[in-house]
Image (cartoon, helix red, strand yellow):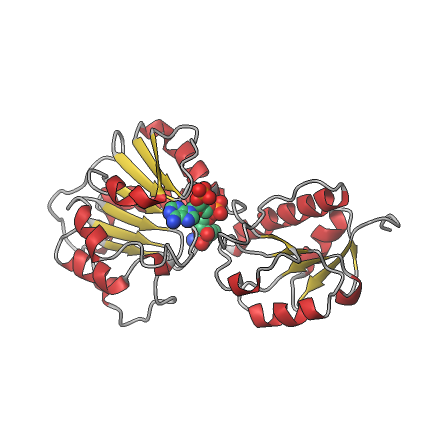
Amino acid sequence: MSRPDAPRIAVAPDSSPTWMVEAVNEGGGHVVPLAEAEGVVWGDPRDPGALEIALDQAPKARWVQLPFAGIENFVHLLDDDHIWACGKGVYAEPVAELALSLGLAGLRGLGTFTRASEWTPPQGTNLIGARVTILGGGGITESLVRLLQPFDCHVTVVRRQAADLDGVDDVLEADRFADALPGADLVVLALALTPETEGIISAGELELMERHAWLVNVARGKHVVTDDLVIALREGIIGGAGLDVTDPEPLPPSHPLWSMPNCIITPHVGNTPEMAVPLLSERIRANVRRWADDEELIGLIDVEAGY
Ligand SMILES: NC(=O)c1ccc[n+]([C@@H]2O[C@H](COP(=O)([O-])OP(=O)(O)OC[C@H]3O[C@@H](n4cnc5c(N)ncnc54)[C@H](OP(=O)(O)O)[C@@H]3O)[C@@H](O)[C@H]2O)c1
């Protein structure tokens, strides 16, 4: 039985999983219909049209909780009438672990070796002591930087505002990101998708990278101009690419990237549902508690910046 002053939270759409309802209850919230709700926990990451309709039915709602870290599908709905929060940082640890896996696998030639049906010539460079550039300085990057500590890498981070990060050697502001590409053995994309970052890696940037360097993308497929990447991989302009996200997504079966030994593709599994459910549940619980206590929510969206 919730307290009489418990925050009134709607969980929508109706198809949202029951664990979201449980998370609201466990956070001390009282689950109510949209018309009575002061907050809306939104369960469908791919249906912004339905959220727009739901918000019309929730005139008292002041807080909207989105489920994913990347909110590009919802960015046109952002307004100053609501406090918007998302899953930024929630999935940081599993996604960072995958970024590390793709980087290590690429640099050590596993794309080639796992496809081979005979003994093949040696190839591979170390991650130990390597120069790593990460675009984005949010939750995923913080986790990845921690995972990279034992590898003694020189880490450069590019973020919108050049605020320092623990364990990072150099932090550059976004407009200097091209300076961070030459010399890097590994370039990791872990930034938000916005109009400024769509297509941030195209032919010119790939040319700036080292011929042995690997590009790892665990953010969004649209950060990379796919046709330019295909050419760069085919012509040896870069060493290879490890992609958890692609454009288009899913990547069609006939796409040339599938057959390139210097390309390792995972099907957007930076966080599987098995990993994500407990993490997002905890975020919902925490934010319902914070809402009740009038504290700042975790994962607030900057409406103007769009992430
Ligand atoms: N593969 C997967 O399964 C998976 C899972 C979760 C998330 N993702 C993707 O990964 C992205 C990052 O996740 P997160 O949790 O780390 O999010 P986050 O904490 O919101 O971090 C986003 C980062 O992007 C940076 N950024 C924005 N514009 C930039 C620009 N023009 N140049 C350089 N950096 C810029 C921000 O810089 P500031 O720090 O200066 O604000 C921030 O550090 C998400 O937006 C999502 O698209 C993918």
